[in-house]
Amino acid sequence: MKYAYIEITERCNLNCPFCPSAEFSGHRGEMPLQTFERILGRLQGHVEEIFLHVLGEPLLHPQFQDILQAVNTSGFKLNLTTNGILISKHTGAILASNALRQINFSTHAYAYLPKEKALATLKDSILFADRLRAERPEVYLNFRLWNDSADAVSDAWNATVESTLSKHFEAELSQERFSVRHKSFPIAGRLYLHRDSRFTWPDGTGDERSEGTCHGLRDQCAILFDGTAVPCCLDYKGKIPLGKFPGDSFDQIFLGEKAERIRRGFENHKLEDPFCKRCPFARRFR
Image 1 (tube, rainbow, N blue to C red):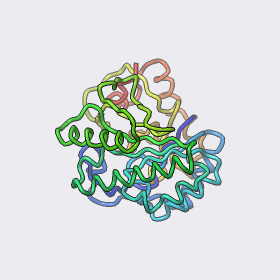
Image 2: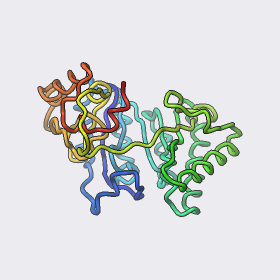
Image 3: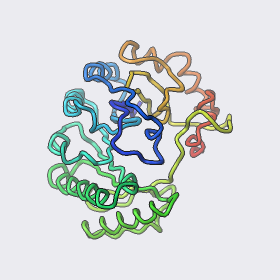
Image 4: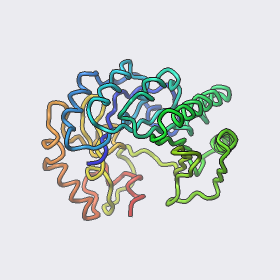
């Protein structure tokens, strides 16, 4: 399996209308450092790369730098997705991480901030990108934007981001070139503007469809903050629990009868679980 998404915290310091984090009025929980370290041990030999989120902003974890160090000594490659609000606080530790393969800034989230805060956060992410190019040119960085805006706020913000990046990096960026098969546009070195279509997070409701497939259990899995293992990074409510780390082993969870039934269904273009049947994201796959 290529990716494991590990939700080290479900807290977030933003309240974006497109994200399910906005549903939760209180703090549900955080993964203790010791549990995280034990989970990394369970994933050894089974997973190549990890992310530090399902929901939540990973840089909010009170022991984020200790978690980063645990990844550094684990042998896994790290892909870090962040809204960038706290990037200046952790820049040194992130740039020093030998595990870091890619960092993604959720730049589309800034559209819902007050303008001064949005511009300041964008500036911080660009300053980080400048240092990354100078100190870690082998690491990839994506500035992420929604392409098909759902509102005028996003439209205006997309234009601001594109003009700011174009001016700072002296790069030509045009939204007209976007297509579902062409989402990433080079800016400089390994820096990219990544555009994607906005999607609705699945919540187990809606119309069912039996035919379809998914990358879950083939290319990826996810582990929620309490250790619950699920097939993919969109099952933020744990609707398809397969087992629980660190008590259960990787094989017990992902080679068990339930996981095998879902995986065989995906291979045969058949959605087995009710949650998968109602997942709008699965309908992207042919």
